[in-house]
Image 1 (tube, rainbow, N blue to C red):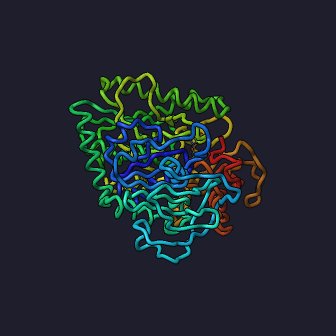
Image 2: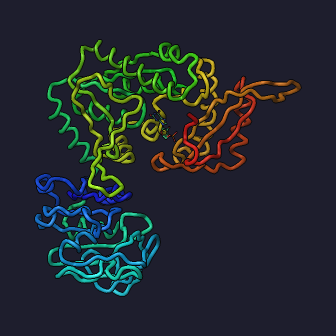
Length: 512
Ligand code: XMP
């Protein structure tokens, strides 16, 4: 296993992605982690991330001495390289020749880090982002490559197995970066590369059994990827000690609630409580138009209903949650200061605050796409594993204005046609999220010989990697024409279709 110490780079998570893709387990910890914890982790190699600070600043983040005391190979990236040099007796300076973006390095020497990837004499493309640079190497180091802005673009002390790169091997703009990281983890650090999802599944099942013992676990199921995978995994571990509670707020897509119930009861034999609370939710939302009040109302009711169902079961010892790794990484604040914050992400469907149960979070070491791989490993149908993200408040935030059953039904019909066409065209997996919005507007149209005065709807489809930013999906006009034609012809009550072409930012993905 590999330990990644985070100095606050925006791309530290990518280092972890690359390392895991090469079949090596790793974790990201803050640079300020206590020495005993670092020693206890048992890393075969340590990677020091980049970061926004300058080693020349007062109070700049330091590499803990425990890192070098391990005697294991160390790879410093960008700030990591500079800090390593500064602490081991070299020198770092701020230079006017800053490098941002694409750059080239000239390879001067062979090194274990480059074996089979880059040869002496080659000129290779990398991605740089630095103001400071190393200007004198500590004793024992040699310069392996130079770039225009960095005389020590790659450095190595092969004896002590300490390496440093000024560029970022973890980003795709460094074409052979993943191969360099693999050389470090496999060849230099000697990791086997046998970490697989099948192995993870087995390890996690053992861990759940050890944690839960003979206790009872309840799990909120929403039909989304994360809660589904968590539920099936826990069920494999402890069988009927698990009960899932599906609070159906009545604002799912057409057929989705039924599919969740069918899949989990029939296919996986999971004990599932399905509480149809749609009257309660829709009743409470009557006349509510403000998006935040909609969210709060739904969130509050969710907790109440979940609590109620849990008490009916006589309580439980553990609450299962589908928390993912990006939510739990102890991140270094991007100001580069020493403050350490733990991100926590609670949305609708999250933890009822009033419940005092211990948590079971079997996905807390996985990234979203790893959860999908695990889901496939567990035999969860592609329709669930590959599903687009769906917001906790459901269709309520896709109907600007107040919510009624009629509006929900109308929107479901539009949404079903839109997604059917997307699937038929083979575009579903290329899109991050696609959905329809029911607009609180009536417009005039003409059908046959008659005048219509009906509602308008908007279609939305975006690409994204994390939902933080998004681009509009560029459908061709023929596709949009076909969808609009079907919607207006088949959904009585809708006579106009628009396509939302706003990116995020400045828009958001959802309309509310
Ligand atoms: P926005 O609209 O903020 O959405 O660009 C970003 C991502 O978050 C989802 N989203 C929500 N998810 N509860 C959720 O569980 C919410 O209240 C909520 N609002 C937005 C949205 O679907 C997109 O994936």
